[in-house]
Amino acid sequence: MIASNEAKIRERVQQIETTPSIPGVFLPLLELLSVPAEDARVDEVVRLVSYDNTIAAQCLRVASSPLFGLAQAPKSIAGAVITLGLRRVETILLTCCMGQAFPAKKWVLDTGIFWRHSLGCAMVCRKFSEKLPSIDGEQAYMAGLLHDLGFVVNCMAFPKEFAPALELACREQIPLDQAEQASMGFTHCETGRALAEKWHLAKDMIEVIAHHHAPEESSAAQPLVALVHLSDLLCRVRSLGYGYYERQRVDLVHDPAWGILLKQYRELEGVDLVRFTFELDEAVGEICEMVSMVFGAAAVRT
Amino acid sequence: MIASTQIASAKPVHGKVSEPVDPVFRQVRDLVYKVSGIFQLEEKLYLLVDGCERRMKQLAVRSPREYWDLLTAHSSRDAELRQLLNELTIGETCLFRSQPQIDALRKVILPEIVAEKSKQIIKRLRIWSAGCSTGEESYTLAMNMLEESNGLLKGWTVEILATDLNDRSVETAKAGIYGDYALRSTTDYFKRKYFSPLDEKKLQVRPEVKKLVTFSRLNLQDDSKMLFMKGMDLVFCCNVLIYFDGPSKSKVIDHFFNNLNFGGYFFLGTSESLMKLNDKFHLVHFPGAIGYWKPSLKSGKL
Image (tube, rainbow over all chains, first blue to last red; front, side):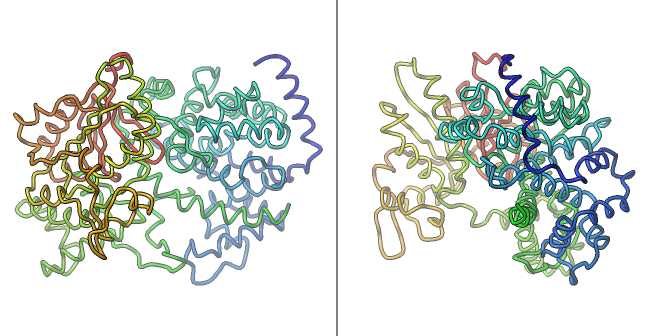
């Protein structure tokens, strides 16, 4: 990246602070989520949910939805948490926090599309990680959820520059990062990195945010970055992309990222990618429903 | 986990809680996938359950478990599995069955093939609809190629070879007469442009569409005839290989591979998988569609 761009991005990201601040539960939550599922503490999650009325109401609303088919809607936060399962609650929390931190009217990208892609990618990352021992599923999930943080920064700090880039991508049906590069001279990878550094996110997470379009350029956590790269590609060809037709042919097995993973995990050779894709399709409906429920309320609050 | 195949047993349909699916049906789903490569998505599992229940009724079998025994017992399994596959694919054919496949063809593949062949003197595109049944897929391809005839394919000759084992299907296909059910996914635009009304209920494909398609009878297992199907740019073979056993399937796929030009593509049905029966094809994803690519010579990836 050109030095002047880097300075410009840093300066604008600093100014993001003037927009509504991140809810207090956000950063403790990130920390809570970085532990494996079996070590996660339900009481801690319930406490965090109760901490914020709006988020608590959101959880109760999602838990009462027909999606879970309960005869009686849960009346307490603890009941909602048990109904939803820990992972869903975490997702709702994170999504609400981000929605709160970044006002909906400022989004250039459609928030629903953004979250469908992020949640989809998170889910694919975790599912992929099941095939790769030693990559932690929860870390992979988090990486998938946050990989496109830069788009949030683009919306908040570079709305005038980002809007034409998005328009170019939709018009030419090309990948969004290519359109950003052509139109702005930098991408969400750089802007996301600046915010991630400001938030002091874990090093691995910063690597993912900065290099998920070119995992071979990452200097640490390369397998995790490669995993996010492949999951991102798969989501974009299975109706969990950015909401427009990308004219592309994706060859996952011959992608350099696949090579990076294969070097460490021979297990990958046995993966039935077609079935994996069909199973992702099965999850699309639920992801969309989740997002519309979470965002139905998130839009009201801003 | 946001979405998983395990939680779907009590998945509601339109807000109503459906009956939990007997786990045996999920075993049947996996068996069908293993043997035929057809994957029944969770949201369409009811189709498989319906199919099994129809068969159970015909056979006077009382429980899913008893039916499972029939599907797995040495003496009855092949015949019964075939019957079940018939149930699963019945009424599946219609024109414009997979829009994502058509989009991939027109937006990604055609520009690529046209660019690749641009230096050849004879500009000819050859497509094979293998196992064309009553012609729905073949005519869909023909109409879409005609749509490109003033654009990408200007000055090109398009030949569509459509073959089926069944004489009666071939005759029906040649007539090109379709009712509402077969035309349920065809837009008014295509109906008006490429069909003539035959009577109140039926439409017939117009001569200019028919001109592109040559129908003939062919047994895909007839090795000597298969050798003559050379020079294809695209091969479509939808829900045909599911009936073949492993070794014959493998052999037919090898024929398809050999008959394709370098850089050509092979497509199966939308819920069908090649199941690693051929490692020379590259599995490639397009938005919403999966295909198999025969690497071009200059890609150096053969």
